[in-house]
Amino acid sequence: MLISGNIEKLAQFLEGLGSEYFEEKECENLEGKSFLRVYKSVLNSKTSEESLANFARWEPGHGNFSFRYPWRQYLKIGGLSRQCAYSLEVLTNYLITVDRAPNSEFHKNIRPICSEMSSESAKALTDLACSMRDMTSPSAATLHLANALAAPE
Image (cartoon, rainbow, N blue to C red; front, side, top):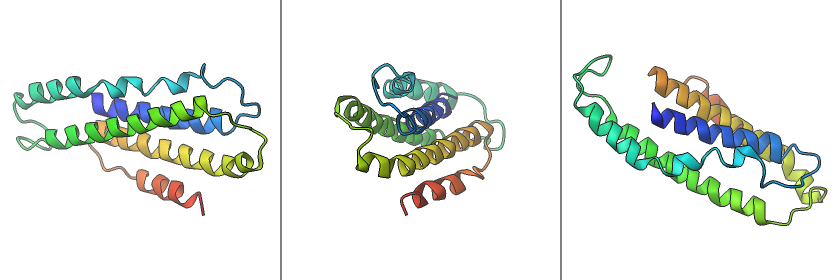
């Protein structure tokens, strides 16, 4: 499904942010990192999502949902994932343009917190994407989200 794939792309960005940006010893050129471009296709996915949802409405009812398939909720989730991708684009532009000192005291203090937050958020998004694809309840996403929220404490 396109929307779950988009959520996984957002998770890949956050995982790369945690592992490559905050864990990096020498922070030289951030522009060449591949994880910074993975979310770009999410920004342009609105028309594809809407056309797929419109085609799917014409399918006969099947599976657990029968005739009450939650297409509108999928479109809402798609819209929220695009909003998240726009925020990630702003964050990326900031990280690329800011002159950061990797050995500054501030950067040393926030490095482990931000790394843990982005890693746990990526795990939560991955679990949500898998549960959407499998049509199951996201069991571990709540735990990962709680861990991400507890990281700054």
